[in-house]
Length: 513
Image 1: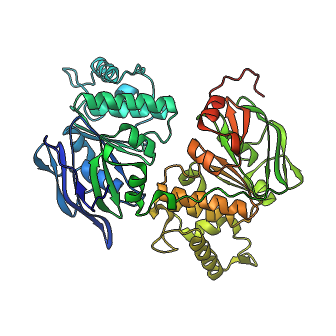
Image 2 (image 1 turned 135 degrees about the vertical axis):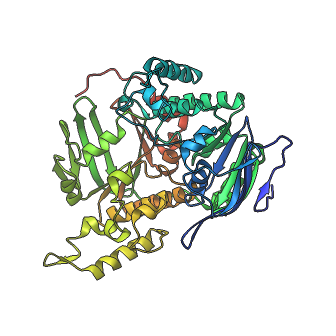
């Protein structure tokens, strides 16, 4: 299939939402340039592109968070320019994000009714009507949430159902889902997609934004590709192959992105974990990492993988077992202790736990090694900038300046900064917790390449991932965790998605430490 930039598949029915010549500038930076395509009622419209392609800016313009510098948004045949998301919601347009914006200390019903509380004759909130309406809206989604429960105690999936229920209160015409499954279990994701199908079948238009191409292929009727802030194509989903979709997104073929697995020389044992336990969370965890080896750790969300990593790194000291790092037995008590011993850890939530978002790229990269860059307790700023610039170049961080705030970077480039930060400590072993979470396919390929290069250089690497194809692609062997127990160890030659999932889904009969 040959498709020119800006190609749009014609349709006979009238679009629900049309974008015409949308452009957005932030000072000298172009965030969107001449974007035009249509979204139709009763169809799921996949919106794909690398981080920085302009997807988030486009959603903000549609929902009134940002105003375009040029172009027109047309809803039901009439030009609109919403002043804020509340106005958009009142006109049937709503967005649900991977981190839903709810009030945790209010009830489910109060959050659903936010901004439009039903009133009694004397002007007070009609709680009975509010709760009855919340139950009715949730029932449309097949949810039996307790409308009187506080939102603070609910899961991310339940938060998303509340957001969708709130949108339904306004005669929902267009629902935008931005990375909706990034924090969901497979069963929660399927529940969400069942709701999406139901909304679609009742005439609602749904825009699905996700880096998980298998979800785009599964759910989409139409797909729009953005690249470098421009519209590349809008076509029926059946017109795309996986290879063609990726090539449109990144500008080069899929096979050129991922390096073939190498047969590395596996060296000495670097990290040994013996009978590790954390009371009430996991127990009897034993495994090893060897120089030049990439070990994957798989399992369902909530199985205890991240908790094991945090315990090995000393964030939550263990209640049983021990860690041996490069021949020295250690009782993990703090990250500082483990970092000094030669272990580095990139956390799952890089923005909250791995980086200082308001600080510069320079300061983030050099934070763990400031003592090395100091003389008589005074930081050598020139040396600091040179060190950071060299690391940023090594890990191909795309940035306006080394002194730019990390918050200004895309997700993939933030992850590269996190790599540079911790690898600057020259660790002997490295733990990566969901290293490609929330980043685009091009950045994911670069992260995979970095992992392979680090192992080739003799580093021992543990990769924790919920992405099974990723685990199979990067790992020399895979450890499977289920209900806080290590239930399987599978060599690369024997590993398959089916085998890993079968091990991850098993029930574990045991007493926890």
